[in-house]
Image (cartoon, rainbow, N blue to C red; front, side, top):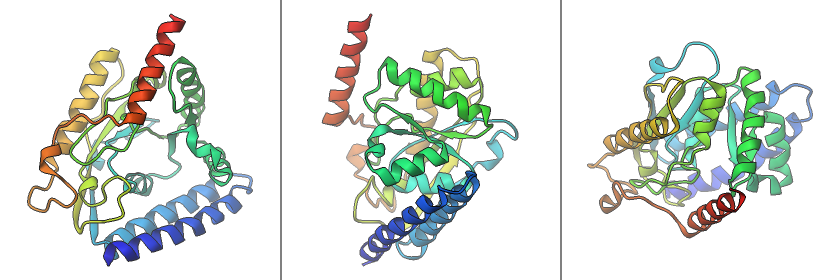
Length: 269
């Protein structure tokens, strides 16, 4: 029953806040719509705790850089991930695929909040667009959220980490903060069923500028995946299947996109 009531309220309030944010998007500055998003995400966290019985505990704030822009790179297991991140920062920009722009309401909101929208198929064109739009975010001195796997991962598993986060790290010349979590145990991907219990989200030691691509990607994945596995609650499994722990997951859509992207890059070279 908890899942049922939470999901109904989730869809109703999402529709209400979406309409409100569209209205706020017509105001001259970005601040009103960012306040609207802050109210939405904090309301969702409240519903997660009170209705779904999911208590989110966020730690590691002391590791966050004190000044300047930086990139936040979390593990992505749940629709709830974004709510947690936006509840911790104000005026946060984020990277998202262009599939969301087919919804005119979302397209208007994404434009107003200054989201970095890139071609979901990837490739060199997407890389150029990512660099160009991310440069504006850096100029504004904002923090930027990107999910390095590019996909929601089933709890216990991981996707191949995509290199877009490295190019942003290189262009921004600023720290990247990895984020580990086990939120997927309580709200796995976009599953209807929610599982009561504690979920941890932890900001890890920042990766400072200057590393090569291979060094950076290896360090980022190792830190996120190692700590995320350590955070797993093996006494209250929730959505976790212990047999999935540590598995590499690549669904058919992701596999087809990767093969197409690699073929396109080989043709251009």
